[in-house]
Every structure is written in C-alpha cells, then in structure tokens.
Length: 249
Image (cartoon, rainbow, N blue to C red; front, side, top):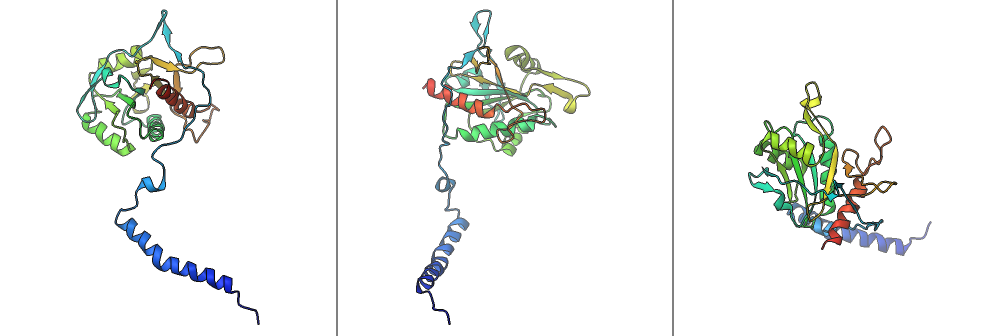
C-alpha cells in the first residue's frame, strides 16, 4: 500500500477551503458590478518614444502650414471650430458612415489610438463626414456609440457640403469626392493628419529628410502589413502623438 502524502492532503485542503469561501465572494462581486476595470488594468497605457527626432512641419511657400479655420456641428449638436482644438494634439480624418470599404478599418484604428491615451484631456480626434446629406447629427451619434467612442474631444462633424470638401481637398490635401460607381458613392483618402497644439500639421520625415505629411489609417498595428506589403503607421503615429504631448506640456 502506498503511503499517503500529508503535504499533498494539506495543499488539497487549502484549495478546497479557497473554493468554498473565496470563489463565491468573487462571483458575488461580479454579479453586483463591484469589480471594475481599474482593478484589472492600469488606467494609463504605458508607452515610450523610441525616436527622439523632432517631428517635421509641412512647409508651403516658406511657411509652416496650419489648419484652416472650420466650424461644423458635431454628433451632439454642438458647434465645433478649430479653436476647440487649440492646446490639443489631435488627428484628422475624412470618412462617411455608410462607407463599405476603408472607413471601418480607419475608425477601428482610431479607437485603438483613443484607448492608448485614456487620460489625456489634451488629445482629440476630428472626424469630418464627406456625405453630410445622410450623416446627420443623429446618424453620427449612433455611429460614434457603435464604435465605442469615449474621448470627449473626439468630434464627428457634419455641415455645409462645399465647406467640408474645401477643408478636405484644400485645407488638408486629403482627397475626397463623390464618384458615381464608387463603392458607397464616394472616394476619399485613407490617411490621417496629425496636428500639434498650435494647429500645425506635423509628421515624421522619410529617408531623404522630407515630411511624410500623413499616416496610413487603413492598416492596423496588429496586422503590420497589408496584402500589398505596405507597412502599418499606427505604432509610429502613437509614438508621435506622445512626442507632441510630452514636448508641448
């Protein structure tokens, strides 16, 4: 007959007691919503900047380009202008809510970026629709909720059609157009623009020292590459947002 291992019996007894006493309390806390996210993860997403090189300005005719003035209604019916973003680092995109191709990818990536800066009141996002006839305040409100938008400085804006297209094509040089036969009826850039706290367009430089100007918004950080071998820019964009936030405290 084998000898009984009393140490094994002791450990088993402790596990049994834990299961009887502790586990029901944990289950009860979960059922009563007493367990919060802050207990399971830090509120701050830890990030570091791997490249300390200052970001470049987009220079046109010898002057650094600033965001042109704009004023549109957001998903809450509030009038939002470029002055709302003064003192904030923010991203700009052009999209439309019924887009069947690149917009869902872009906004999932923006939500990922949003969640990387959960406690920064000096960070925001500006999303401008290129289909204002359909994208009303109510539509944009539902769209923001569906994507899990929590940043109070993330505004989905709609308004005068000509003003929106002028802002896209002239203000940011981010192509947007209504195109018959295109998927969803529109074509637009899948890039994001990065704006600093003074309202200047900023970016990294390429190997020749020229500003890249924009960041690819379609490829996620987890994907790393698209089907054509293009690499993602989201990880670099997160670093550059942090760089601007930290450089301009």
